[in-house]
Amino acid sequence: MTKRITTLTLAGMKENKEKITMATAYDYASAKVADDAGMEMILVGDSLGMVVLGYENTLGVTLAEMIHHGKAVVRAAKRAMVVIDLPFMTYQVTKEDALRNAGRAIQETGAPAVKLEGGEEMAKTVEKIVRAGIPVVGHIGLTPQSVGQMGGFVVQGKNERMARQLLKDALALEDAGACAVVLEGIPWQLGQLITEKITIPTIGIGAGVYCDGQVLVYHDILGLQTELRPKFVKQFGQFYHPMVDAMRAYAKEVKDAAFPAPEHTFTMDENIIERLREKF
Image (cartoon, rainbow, N blue to C red; front, side, top):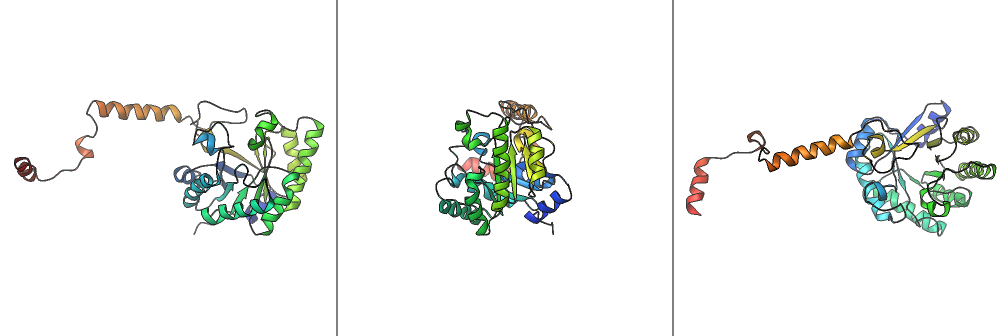
């Protein structure tokens, strides 16, 4: 049996200074690739709104959509710890709503953990969910669900006031019982400081190499995105154009009647066909 990654695994990795790998995936096929590659964590991110569903941002993603995609990812992941994003307005109104929606996400997908955005202001909500037995991953810095308030996808924590608040946010999430925290779009020095000051793992995305782990989106890792590539994204493959070329080759063979070839087809007794021709 493959040993599952758990919150205890992640805590041990931080203690042993072993880097944590995390990829964002949205369906069975991509999650299977990530799991087979040895990722410790797979995030079913609400970024699926933009990457998979074609939305302008993450704000239109529903809990039902997260659950739909989450189920597929959980079915594929045999080792990785799967984390489900709680989408916009499923946890911000009341702590009771947050717990109810977190519970639904866990029950209906089978994932062991949820993720939500926010720091000090969300600490009590995180605490309530954790007390119910649901592991929570925090998310601070550049938080996509608050991108309108932030004025766009801009680096956070560059001045002393903002940096101090982000450090307080991380400490508050730790005190609330979060099992890890994603640090997005902050200076590497601040990512290093937060990682040193808290005992739970930090997962960076645009937060520097000193975080306990890193997360990137499956489509960015493989070079499947051609429109938007933030500075913190590195493509470890360029598969978009080869995929387009393969689709074009398929289309050409269909139009030229070169596919399907005899080796791709089935056969039957010609006498039967002849009798059918005569009868009909």
